[in-house]
Image (cartoon, rainbow, N blue to C red; front, top):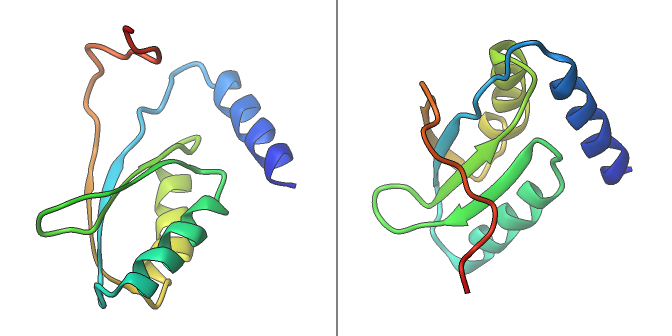
Length: 108
């Protein structure tokens, strides 16, 4: 089911004439205990729209890379799946204005 969702999402994005650059929301949990962290990681792994999930230091606990077909879909996903999560205390989204470099392979 997850693979089908990813395929459908990829297909929808590739059909768009203009690519919607992914936003990066920062998420602060209400509770910083290991159980909350582990549960949040598992829950983010279930969403095809969450392409990357990083546990980070600082004022927030997680940085996500979310890919949707447009801003409306992003807002819906954020409201229905992230904001509604009882573990989440605060969200701050950083919107990408342009992309100057993107690498998917590492030099070894």
